[in-house]
Image (tube, rainbow, N blue to C red; front, side, top):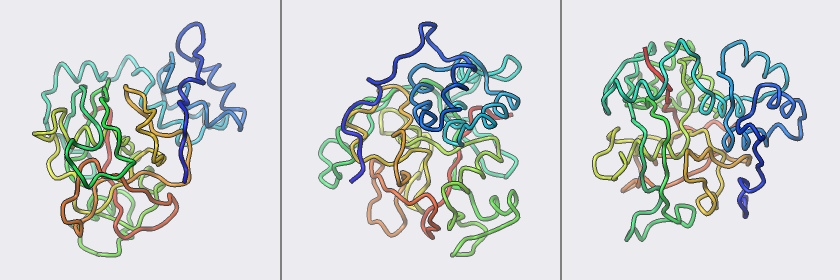
Length: 286
């Protein structure tokens, strides 16, 4: 069984300046052995520079992987000419809907706190859903109101790989990398497990920001799956395990009698599942 039995965060020592500058991060990325650990430093320390297309190109040339770029998109400060999450928080009401270029509607989710994991009294919870713990989401985000449909996926990629063909059904039979690539093509990314559950629970767990987050097909998330991650998860914006062999999926499938919001699944990132699809998040919307 894969799992991290001690807090990786305890191994991270941020620079004296607090956050990493581009040169410091580049030095880590150039060392293939240290590149995966760079994501821990990004999550714990942050960075001093915005992730512009030029910076991304330089970091990728130095050896940055898609996972590292995804972590940077979450933590890097916004360029001065783009709206910040704080600005969107003050100007956009929770639950506001906007449509992306692929035709999918997105819902604004403001920052906040929620209790993640097994609900008290839920006897169906697996061990990987425990312990229940408070999580703080520091930046608001937009999340797709529905899963990516076959129509939307084909509009962007020109392809429909789904096993169950129907333009209105969720697209499936896509690898984790294909799902992430699709989200990036619509200026987004895959959600973390914490973001997914926060959007589904809406903080207090009574009125979800996004109704019916579960029960169609499972949904790829950005996180590596770690069955013991809740035992040492950071309390703020948990990025998921630093590495692994399977990716976390959330949401359950229509065959489940009562899909639960805390239920966690996993899938091999390169495998084509006919019951795993996509839901993207974006930091901002036009």
